[in-house]
Length: 348
Image (cartoon, rainbow, N blue to C red; front, side):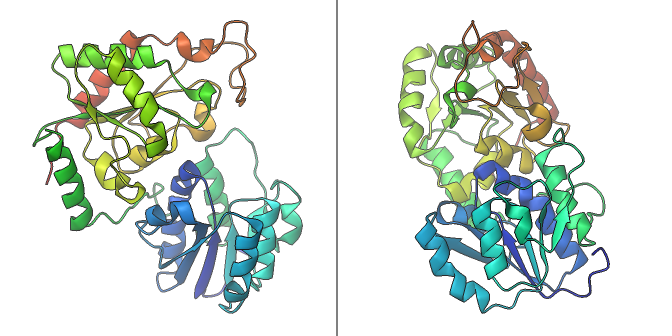
């Protein structure tokens, strides 16, 4: 398989989620490095399409609705494309069936894929251990088709002048001029991933007191309530952009931050991808598998016997001790170090 002939049309199946999409970016870079003239189409859930549109190396984004009907409706058009190579990095029954019915003759997926997905692949890629980062695991599929990356894994977004202008105008409308600022993301999909808001508030107050702000608090529209609670807890002021930064503009937005303080979340991975130092709070999940990728980040946790448990329900006697025992002082110290390493990032 490593001696595949010239490839012209590639279908990459990775419908979700936000962090997983970012982890897949080095596969795109490696495949396009191997076959620069190949046309690569990314099949993705519609809600994530505007981010994938900004990934360098993606020639076409094929959004679909995240329902069985949505998947079935896309199949006839997919089948007409005559794919040379299908990469299923989702590894579930539905994604594998889509790959099989797409008509691609070479279908690559992981040997340990779930829900019977390996039965639909022509090439099954072994995963030597579960204790490897998702980025490195996805790259195993690229290596299997002879597209191993040359050098370090590459994360490249297309951030154009329009994206930069929108971000610049948004920040300046909130009073952030050409100055260094710190992004803060206080939410996460799982409750068990959320560091206490009181601790985030203590960090914001201390950093502001030391003149290391401003703190720009971000989040999606559905996370506004948590941001409002944070604003009631701080004694200093924070800048609220929750719900104001569309998904597609997050790479441009986070690339301008001096550092980011965050729970384990999708935006964390975007920040890491654009080179912004991250200070991340990890509880039930594995730093080794899904921590911010690269050496310029700090991940804080409190080691207890049950972590990582990968659970959305905490069953520990001291609820969420893996997170609640992380002190604000540790976070402040980590931010100071990472901020100094980053320096001042001026708005263009």
